[in-house]
Picture 1: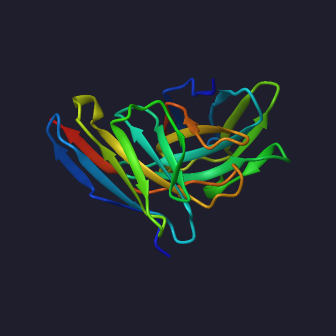
Picture 2: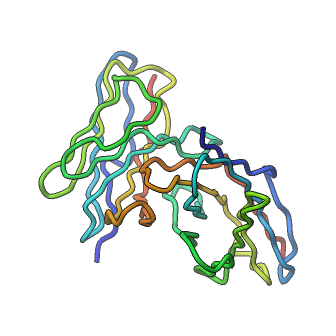
Length: 114
Length: 113
């Protein structure tokens, strides 16, 4: 049983560019959440997708957008990259059960913005 | 607003000794509480969670945590530390009925042989 997978592993971009990160959830899971983890900090909630809709969003600008596909996989898009967007981006999947569901994390995508 | 505090940046303990990693939280409703561990260059691994019921929760790798509503705490404990427990530990909270999970800043645990 494959866990949560993310691609790519590492990515280097320059300021102003756009990036797309991808996530495949754990088998049987229907919900995907995205987090940004800056160096030395805890993960920060970006948004959560369920039934192909954004269900809740954290305190991130509109430059951060996402999508969930019918097979539950998800993409995170970041436009107009800033130096401060450099971070580890984590995807977490879960089975929606009313709030107490456990999130399982992928290994992350390390984004470096130069 | 929801928040999680992990007051210690680092905890040092000798192998075989008990360990405690502290966590306090602030939410406006009833919380779901979680502990995760992160090894270098890896994603977060789930350890345990409190949803309701018994205040003492047992999880993976011999870890346990006690929910204390009056002190709004959820400290992580293990009776006997292993060198392999050395890692970064995160406490997290989600409000009942919500979908956003708030993580603490993390506590680095160092277990010395």
